[in-house]
Image (tube, rainbow, N blue to C red; front, top):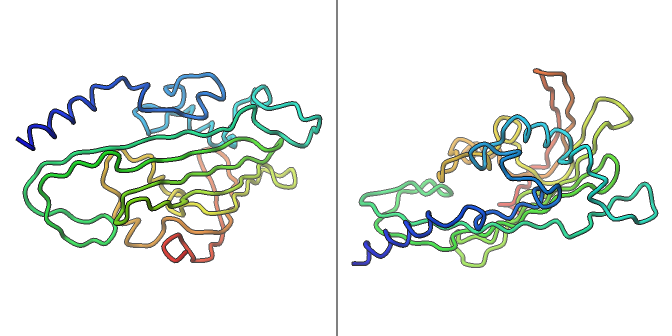
Amino acid sequence: MIRIFFLLATVIFLSLPKNLLAIPAFARQYKVSCNTCHAAYPKLNSYGEQFADDNYRKANWRDTITDTGDGMLALPKFVPISIRAMAYTQIREGKYLDPVTGDKASSDTDFQAPYMIKILSSAPLSERISFYFYAILAEKGENGTVIVEDAWFSYNRVFNLPLDMMIGQFQISDLMFPRELRLTFQDYMIYRMSGITYDRGIILSTGFEPISLEIGAVKGNGIEEN
């Protein structure tokens, strides 16, 4: 009977309108659909990739900021915050691999709602500087654990050169393929095991299509140590 309840709950959850499941700050900021930048969410299309390369802003980004009287300062007209809640159910027999510890554990019926609440914020701060902030309220061993994952500033065209800079806390693995753009619930274990997820440091990037060059340094004090 319990399994039937979980199965019905899953069907009801998946049948909810999609606009109830996404509250993107970028879409509200520029008054566009999520499909403008995303193919199958969270996968980016070519326009979304260009949007990220352009320091997370469109050409008309100044239309979205408040007139402060200071031409060097750019503040958004509203607090750019998005909140996303995730839930899942699973019914199976056997063992599963813990994505954090790598240990095998028993798996039967599991219903987690919400499993994770994500808080995202990003906006331009000046002509060339943008910020990005991403935190999660997750059920990962301890209920109510808050983890700040991404928190960085990006600076376009440093010294008027074709050189971009990112400084703060970020995922080193994003240089190969961003983990957050995966379509699967399971994490990329090779990223976890090699320790190239979140860390603090600086990255300088440049290049010309289709070649890019990125070089940087990190302190080796990722969120696990912090």
